[in-house]
Length: 84
Image (cartoon, helix red, strand yellow):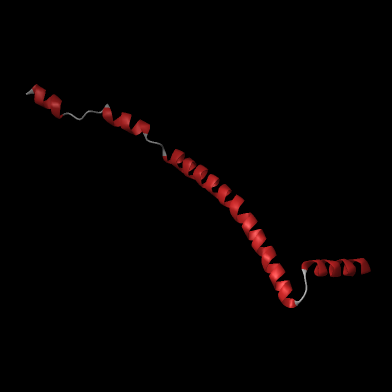
């Protein structure tokens, strides 16, 4: 009879061992932030030059459609600035 009671008793030693290997919520959140920071940094190094290049290309195309160019606009701005 006493053997059956001991066999059916819950083993408390296994549960804390399993929970100690699991990360806390704060650690999981920190790991997610760290991964997200690396991902955003990599995306930034790729997207920022592409966006700047695209803006330059759109400006150049728009000015060419109007019949002028970027150097002509810069020269006109310098002439206006020298008048002041």
